Amino acid sequence: MSRALFAVCAGCSVLLSTLLSGCVTNTVQQVREASTGMLATDSVVVLGRRSRPSVAETELDYISCVGDSVGSGGTKLNVIPEQDFLDAMFPWFEPRTAPVNTSELPNLIAEAPLAARMSEIGLRYLVWIDGATKRTEQSGSLTCSIGTFGGGCFGFLSWENDSSYEATIWDVRSGKSVGKISSDAVGTSYMPAVFLPLPIIAPVRRSACGAMGDQLKTFLLQEG
Image 1 (cartoon, rainbow, N blue to C red):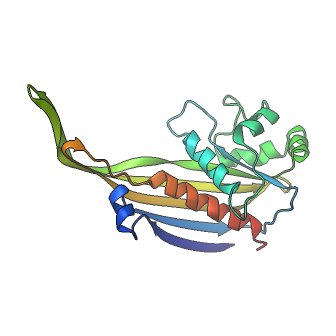
Image 2 (cartoon, rainbow, N blue to C red):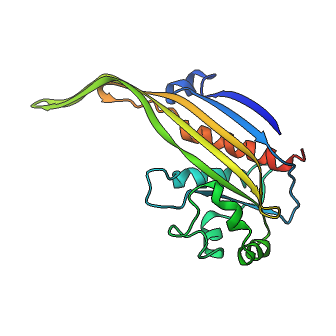
Image 3 (cartoon, rainbow, N blue to C red):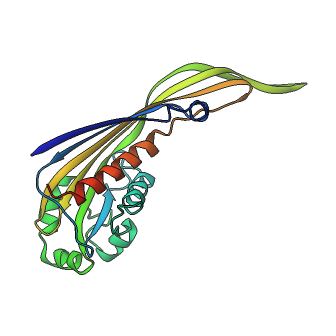
């Protein structure tokens, strides 16, 4: 088993970028449990928790973002869109029957009809993502009012968001986990207001998505 740690800071080096968006610090960690590698005919799918509605479900737009990231760029991989995969695998991954956590995946993948269908669509790796973006801290105040001669807002708000996600990668041919990747992004957003609010938003979830997508491509392509 091998471990790796990567850290980057996005949106902090250029003054104009800082004025338009808050600073985001992103940390990526990976644990490798088995060797990987992909042929030109192999595909990967990125899934989130399907037991909806649930307070623990991973945001749908984050899942789509990671899938788009893995399927783009110079080292892009063949990605099966989540909804296409769900349609092809009906009814195994419908909200009422889908696994709730990764411990249920080995038995599910081992079912012969499901394994056969995954083979038909060329699926090699199933990436299961858990996590969420949460507001962890807020300070300041903002007051808006309307009067006879107009209105406006005055004050200053700041808040911190934490995007914490973990991807478990499953080799559907062996039915075993080959590793895990976690992406944690923390950023502070601001909203000063003198008559009009000026939001300066830290792209926390987008940064976590990009880091996760890039690391997934590197992880799956490396034979290690």
